Image 1 (tube, rainbow, N blue to C red):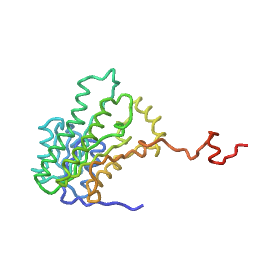
Image 2: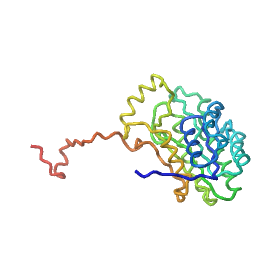
Image 3: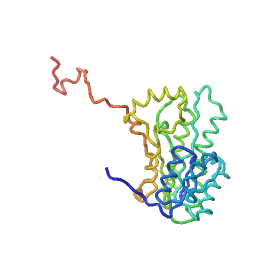
Image 4: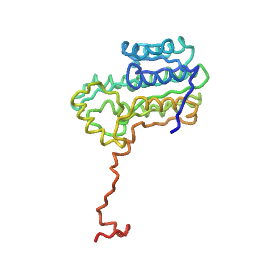
Length: 275
């Protein structure tokens, strides 16, 4: 298969949720393609681990994106430390699980504060900076496959991700006149779980993974590759879209190579004889 390379030399990128997992990999891939990156998260220790291999290519900001001051400080770090902002990747999210009957209001509000208000605040701050700069830009928000299907225990998370998708469509319309393209990435099951896995999580994944069309979880690098494409000139006519990177989980389950049709009602269509 052909390999794909990107050149982000001279570009400045903000990545939230950069202390681990997908966010850390997005930082790594942007740096490897020449970009300078502002890596943001609440987790200072995790940020230090993310930035350590990259020297002065990565500037870290410990901030809470659910507050105006936190979001503004992240964007300000890009424009003051690196002198500009070209790409903003709003990857940060929280996903605690509880049943609807046991969900706590304060937990619900925190999930929406980070996932929805945080995405709004980061998008607004990035949009203002890009418009002032006058050179367009890219804003890439994050959702989740659970936004489109029911999943027990995910009432706050799933609904907050659906709200993020709707917000992204509005942002895409409003920012398009400024040549700022807004799109959303919606990952499925990605291998970012804590190791070793807690027993209940291990049991759930053992049952779930074989049902996935590709029968495996995705890798953080596979999500990052989609982000790099959306940030590139190759996606110059893409705005307001939601891209699922879920190995086909959103459309069906694993196919096992054989179709058995025992329904005799349509033998007249197929001409099948069952003698």
